[in-house]
Image (cartoon, rainbow, N blue to C red; front, side, top):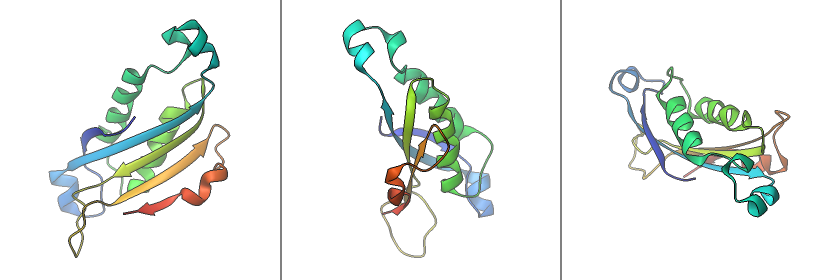
Length: 128
């Protein structure tokens, strides 16, 4: 899923905590889809609408200083889903206060069910 948008109050500056801003989240999940492909039953996969609502709730929840922490919160939400084995979460902060003009500030965090970074952990980090 990409482009999940909700208003949050995350940031290290007071004005970010008071005024808030929109955060945009992309989620990529690894899960076995073989059963769902055959059964054509929602119970055999992830309810993407429910997950999108949960991600929005994570964005709207208690403020955090860093988007890295927000990405970890959302990854934990994704990994609570029984079928999900790996979650890749990108948090975009398009209105991040920056000393120069930038189109976006984003981080991508990849986590596995075990809590350990996946083999793609080299992807953890800031992207612009």
